[in-house]
Figure 1 (cartoon, rainbow, N blue to C red):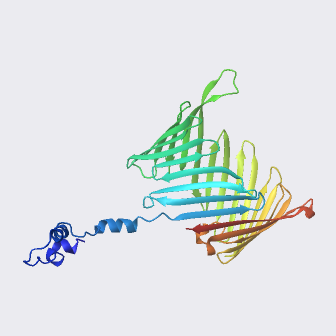
Figure 2: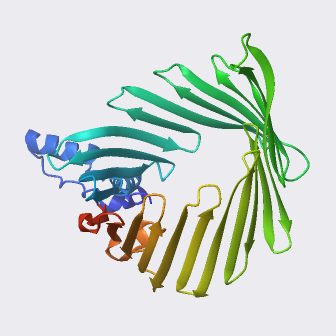
Length: 345
């Protein structure tokens, strides 16, 4: 908005002096007031000062009674939420700081600096074309990284990715399609006396079968077959690995919207585990289970949404209490807790 004094100068300019001869001092003061009227700062400057507010800080602290460590994060968003700056570190009961890291994240560039290792990790992405994207990863201290190029093919759901380690390594080609993906890469066979290059094939295929999903995962010359059946009340997930013939299955039964039982059994090792879960509203969850592998029974209580973010919980805080009871020594049972709290400053 323009200054009103510039639109109508008669409103601010004083009337002419009387005909009587004024003193020289009065003439100088009067002339000065006419030549240099008081000015106001432009409205654009005032609006900039109002909008140039300090970025809001988000402070998150988590305490684990088992390790007696605090995990702290301080972050803020910059440039109208186009970038994020974060500081993370741990400290113990003696207030000794460890693992400090500083990160800067934006849409195209991410930088992570490890203070203790004095190392920097850089990740960048660039959209050269609506169907072509370039990516690069670099470890400054190790002088290693990876470059990749991914092109979306005209057929919907299909893309081709070419990647290669830097500075030394064999390139990898990955074809992605609606039912999965297949990767091809050369590698050296270290078991042979003379190193011989072979073609390594890895891939995953998924397909809907009846009311479930059948998955075939092939990696490192091992094939894993898995079928997952799921409806509103029941889930049944058998799996087998070839050529080791290691088989297992998972069973989940939902008795009500707030009650659920999960069971897992491994035929090869005869190990099993079971977990019962009950929720009370959105912010309370009770879980109890047993694991035969470590011969341990446990129970935990969550106050706050376990899977959700802490900012959506009441008072922006989550608490977990856990009781662990070893089967072989009940007297050595341990009660642990974790607390996570967020402050917006």
